[in-house]
Image (cartoon, rainbow, N blue to C red; front, top):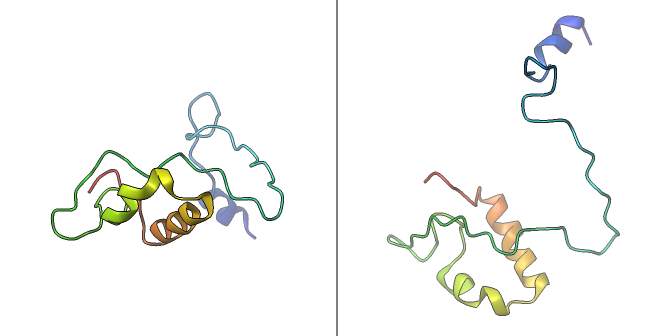
Length: 93
């Protein structure tokens, strides 16, 4: 790659030389077959199901929100995968 391409792809830096969004941190490796670390809930406190049965903030259905605390981790992970693929959670809707 050219030096011009490398400069164009450079991350923005603060005056002190650190990356604008903080230093790059390596993510820990997780054992095969384990679920990824996630927050306890996808809720972002933008709760609205005014126009349909899907929350505009987190992307969960009314039933998923109601039963979240009693869902097994594997079922929650399936919900997480779906809502992330659909672009949720959304804080600014």
